Structure formats: structure tokens, C-alpha cells
Picture 1 (cartoon, rainbow, N blue to C red):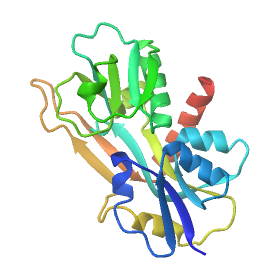
Picture 2 (picture 1 turned 90 degrees about the vertical axis):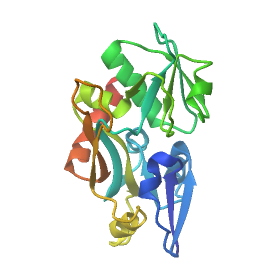
Picture 3 (picture 1 turned 60 degrees about the horizontal axis):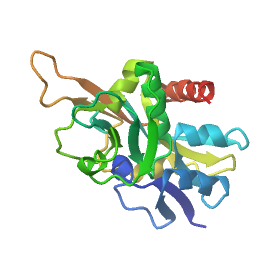
Length: 239
């Protein structure tokens, strides 16, 4: 039987899925929310889930975390941005990617914690920040852009607020027995030579400030296990 695996679409997750899948694997790229649905209904054996999806499902189903590749942002990482309309005085409306499930909730918690703000979140397909900011005060984006809008690095702000990495996803399976080679198989899907931890340093700092820096975690480890528990507690507390 072929192994069915569900993983989110989008450039944010591309380094984890850049290598060709083996013949014994059926890789389904879909929305973050649909990945969780496929695993919950046993339409796949393995899925890449966010802490939100994992927390919701584990209340009723026994899930196991597979110690393989993962994705978490620790400090300044240049991966997820919140861009603002120039001249902004207050934040009332924020456009978020329609295909995202966890990140908009993480943004909501972050803005509440740091700035006591609760803007209306508007799901939409985000292609260009310049277009999105015609209709809102801010836009959450992970597209590579070259606009000059004021912006926050969401991974950096999250680490400042909560002092643990922003965990975006990890591999999960149901409680049934699966091959012992599964962690190695999932790691083999990632980009060739992808490190367990990638250091990021700001290329063009603004003098006299020193360069900002951070790390991207590409592999499950104890830091991410601790971050998951703290994230689940945070999500539970804020409902």
C-alpha cells in the first residue's frame, strides 16, 4: 500500500518538500485546514499540522508527533511579515492569507499581547501587498516582495512577546503502527542539504543599530517540543 501524506501549499513550506517523493508515497499539497481534515478522516496516514490543528484534533484522537522535519521561527527570520499602510495611525482591518489557518490566530494573539489591539482579520488571496493595502490597514504575508511599506517581522515579534519560537508545523500520524523508516522518509522530502537549524542575519541593518538575527528550525527537537506545549497553553487560555 502506498503511503499517503498531506502537506500545506505555499512558499513558506517549500524547503521541506523540495525533493521528489519516492514511488511508494502519494504527496497531497493542499490547504493547512484540509491537511488536518484528511488526517482526521483517515484519508491520509501522515499530515503536516500546525499547533492549532494538532491541539484541536488531539482532544478526541490519539496523534503521534513524528521526529522528522518541522518549521519554527526564532527571532528575526525574514519569513513572515506584517506590512502596514503608510501613515497608519491605528490598526482596524488586517488582510490575512485565505489558505492560512494558524498564522492569523498567532497574529491575533501577538497583537493583543504586545499592543492590546484586536483588528478585524479579513481572509483573502494575497498576491501583492500594494494591492491588499488599498483595502486594509495591514497585510500578513510570506510572499517575497520588494515594497518599501513599514513592516514587522512576525517571527521576531513573537519571540519578543513570548520568548519561545513561533512553531508553524510538524509531522503527525494517528496512533496506528507505521514504518520505522518514516522519519527518514519525511526528511528525504526536504531540500537537499537543508540544515536542522538555519541562522539568519539582517543583510542591511539601519545604523547605528546592530544587525538583527534569528534562527529557522527545520527539524523537530526539544526546543520545538517545549514551544508546542507553551503554544497549546496560550491557545487554550485565549479560547
